[in-house]
Length: 324
Image (cartoon, rainbow, N blue to C red):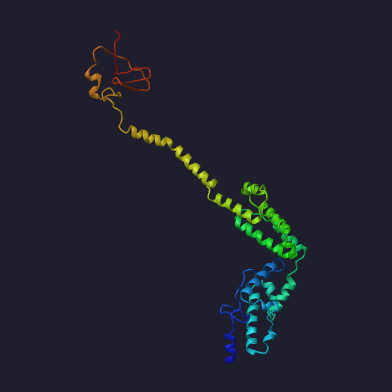
């Protein structure tokens, strides 16, 4: 390459289609979607065109940057061939193996693009039917609200691209309102049953909101539910409460043990409760005028008169003032 040619290439502006950034290498993957066939051609083509537009290389597939306009300059012609090869490699790497094998021998990106469009850009009634069926059968089925909505929204946009409607019709308010109403119904039909209440509120609103507003309303409801204890948490809290209640007896036992940590007074002479041996009447004598009552077997209880009495008021060591 001559010095003059090198100067020309180095002077290429960033917005020139022949300009190549150091990162613009062949084999790089511009998009994550791979062309499978008719079923995803529209999505794939939109993604590729968007990626090539950011690289300022759309001219290599739509014919707006033809090779012949550089035939008078060998350096720029060579640069065009280089750019074409890079764009061609970007397209080929985004194809599945089956589609790739049919295009690997092509020489220009424009030829490959044209052949793929002629082969796979076939929107007939069966393709439209399959997509519309997927839209109407799409349901949340346990996935997050955001994932469900974006999946449905992607199919809506793909369907709108398939169905060619005049721009004037699309711009009319009646069409937009009708289209939004259908999407709202499809979105609400696929929601999980946990949204039954908020869905009913949306349907009874006059006028009904569009699908974006409905998604926002339900998102707030979902956020509220996620920050509210669910059934398992509530059940756990209930079990914990029941566990505490079930241990009440143990707590009382512990309290009773603490309450009676020091055993009651017991006489070592008569083995009765309520007094000690130094106050036992059997040893120190009964007061004058008292008589000893016989002790009846039963559950003993404390008596303030230096004895333990049973339910029949009997006491083996009790004394009582004789009746006059």
